[in-house]
Amino acid sequence: ISAKKPDADQCRIACEENSCVAVNIFQLGETDFMCEILQTFEGTRYATGAACYSLY
Image (cartoon, rainbow, N blue to C red; front, side, top):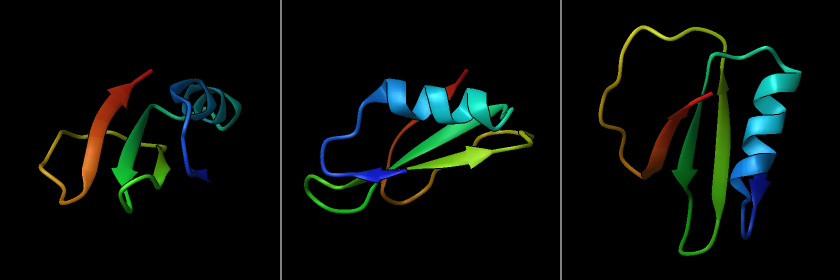
């Protein structure tokens, strides 16, 4: 999911629809963000451009 003004609920819904375990939210530009749907989760690491990390 990529959007100018992302809604955390959009990421959560996409996660639920894809049976994921987590979502990474990356900042692509000043007002551009992207959700990365994760099917597995082993730990956390710093990622350049990551706006936040959320488990659902």
